[in-house]
Length: 235
Image 1: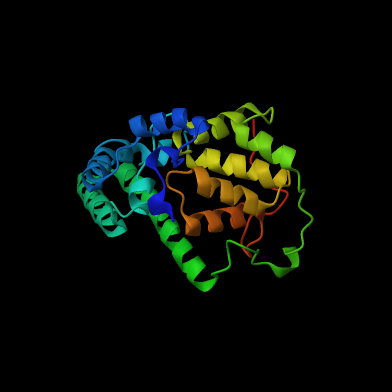
Image 2 (image 1 turned 60 degrees about the vertical axis):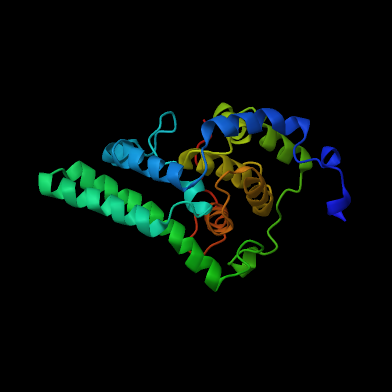
């Protein structure tokens, strides 16, 4: 019975997590009011150049709203409405760049919602590939490779930097998520479910529906997934 356990013997965090948790506390501010501030800051800042900068992983070019959306601190409807209002304003001003940025941002929001549709229709999508003939694909079951990937010790600087950032901050830019997951399944050829589970354990915005769709897409196990020989260059 956990209610009879003394609080000092309950391991809420171990030594290896303390440094990472300290960084999380400084980088993220939970709660609906902080979510509203983050949305306002994005709309009045990076959104304008989102179409140009969204793939730049070395700058604050994205919204960073995914944790707030995941935990229900911000609704998709509210984000959509306020961003569309900004688009109407830019349209009236003839700002075509801003309009394009809004369209691309809303497309990414739509993809998140599509992952719900995907999971509703394929509730086992986090467990097995949609393409049945890949159910018994000969993945390389190598714990050593898996450990090197988790710890950012693969020897590929971009992959390693991404994995260390993930452990330290609980977040990864979308482009780096694609690079590290593509490396995982197409270079190391490890089972994609291992990578999905690790993302679930470490990402602050861990989202089963989005993760299942993303990993299946990268692995090429969806009918419209990436070809297995298409690799996002890890350098």
